[in-house]
Length: 248
Image 1 (cartoon, rainbow, N blue to C red):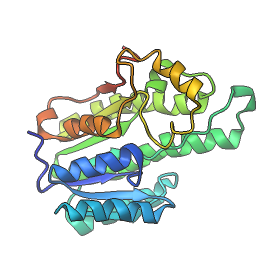
Image 2 (image 1 turned 90 degrees about the vertical axis):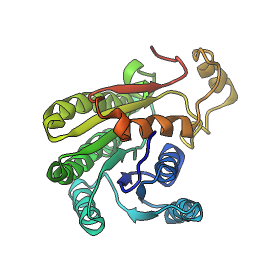
Image 3 (image 1 turned 30 degrees about the vertical axis):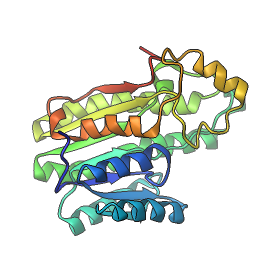
């Protein structure tokens, strides 16, 4: 089950959190992993070193998904150099929180530019390669916030909700080419993004999670791994919720 041997997987934002866990899990399943980073080269190198120490293949590439044309060019170069691109996990994202009346236009543009436009650009680059191979897996990282909303996260929620529409549209566009497109929507997961929450806010959030705990990055990565596998060949246009029952 979930044998990714011989496949090449690109994980954007793979130096920390869910992206790091996803890169590690896909590598454990046999994929050659290319993970991208923007600024933290040391963290990305650490992930690569760990994967290689486990006898798997990985490399890190600097790529700013907020720069669409550059991202497409980088993806084309990776596919040409490695001879293929089987899996794209579009994980890189940013969150700039604040109530709407305090939300600056430049912050809105940045969140949408990275989370939404950046993901679309990466998908475009990957699809060009996958169409020639007549097979491929694309997995977007959405969020429970994109489904249920959250006060103070209008920009982030908008970007993650939009990805669900992108997922369904691309699934319909490229199913005939053997490409599946799905999303994973994590709930309250322990990552750098949530580590700064106060104890009171943390308890408040946990109170609406039926399982009564936060999720882990590897639990989200497991869902990504499934959607990236041959076992998920008949699954497309779907959003897999990994949220402990927070939203049903």
